[in-house]
Length: 332
Ligand code: SF4
Image 1 (cartoon, rainbow, N blue to C red):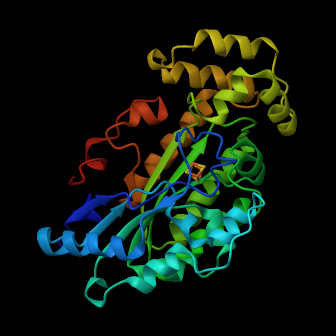
Image 2 (tube, rainbow, N blue to C red; image 1 turned 30 degrees about the horizontal axis):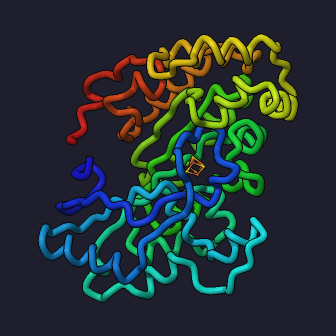
């Protein structure tokens, strides 16, 4: 992969200098990350680690696996203020990380995870990531329909599809690559909303002019531990959520999911996804969602973009249909 995405020899190191997500208290509907509390290492200490990796192993790409790195573009005052906790204003962690960087580490590249909404709220975020040396952002764009983004997938309240467009444009303006995921087959998905996704994927691919390195499409999987599991098994939570989406689900659904899929370790992911869709997607079938996934794969093949779910496609989509050999023959 690295050979395909870089024009120079890359020695990557996977790091976890920060953890968590500022959207963790509300969280995206499919997010099953156990602890999203925001934690981070001090900037000066980080650069000491990067320096060591650089000198001893020649590392020139930091693959920072923080759940949502762009959370740290917000000041602590802004994040804690949402919970009524008053803090003194001080620069965000990202600003302090930039300020603390030693001159000799300016050429080290970064690959991070981000959230589209964060770009909409911080128009200078793309520039700051560029300044840090970020060459690629892994981002869950997920959808392109406001209702699906804001209510079904709970991606955010402020931006919706407009935030996705702003994030794509911000990355394109800075020449930063995008590794994007799409999630379809969520509650209330329709043929029209699937078409919106198609148009958005085409638009983003064009707008990024060769900078989209991966489209990773999947069908929403109701993971145990994620809010989607709670709304499928708990009538108190489910009734509010589905009412808000204008979807009528039968009362038996909650008991059914609770008992049938109690042992999630043995669950057939394709079966549970199909079943969930039969309750909350009255307008489309599982096959319609599957068709969208194959459409994205075909686009990737056409444009020389790496298709997501590489090697674990059966797990991420429940489809398990391999692409043609020439489409997946990228060097690892
Ligand atoms: S943005 Fe990512 S880490 Fe944050 S709640 Fe959503 S899926 Fe989880």
